[in-house]
Length: 302
Ligand code: UTP
Image (cartoon, rainbow, N blue to C red):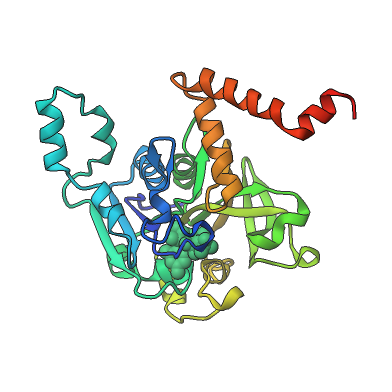
């Protein structure tokens, strides 16, 4: 196999409406909701940088300017903080090499596939990564880095996958698994939001992709799929058999921060993992658990 072209660009689709978090997301992008003190988009960008990504491409829409502001230089803030002798370390991850942040507008949120297609001119003829910022992937090695390492071995297209209970598959893109190659599994089919009985496995696509540029031509046909949206899963399915396609099981934990329960779970887990917060948060959590009627009932042997 010829050496695969390096992955230099990552596309971050952030143009969705975030309706599940209304009213919080009426004037603030969902991707700016913070898990403790970092917005979701910051975790996603940090993960991309760890994987060696150079260019960040944000697919934005109406009301999403705060995301671009977040990665801009806050001259007045920095000057004031410097005058007051406050450390600027917390702002370091928000700095992007000049010229390495690009934005493309998705005027109407027609679906994830459509959002990715909006990046076609920026992507050009290079393979590229896609990161969904509302899926927070926490691992010793970041999810995209794990994928980039696997890509160096097999090239082609890769998606990260997770195992979920069989009765949960209908909310996700699901893969049909083929032969195993070490840690990787060949992908022989992909289906978006299948009925439980029609699902080819319980391995779901989990918000990280490495794709070859040919996917843009397929997305350009603007075919509607599940929910009337232009689905990335459907376009990827058409690449199977034409190009190598593998699934990478993520060694780590995924939090679905697009859902309220997943968001709370991520906040709690990350707080418990932080030395500056763990003790206080554990104490409070135990106190609250002790105070619930359910915990009281079970303590009393009911
Ligand atoms: P989601 O479906 O989770 O986001 O899309 P949403 O539509 O904003 O959320 P709800 O369901 O209304 O609460 C996953 C990612 O894809 C982006 C979203 O911004 C999110 O980061 N997306 C989705 C787009 O950029 N454009 C779209 O047309 C759809």
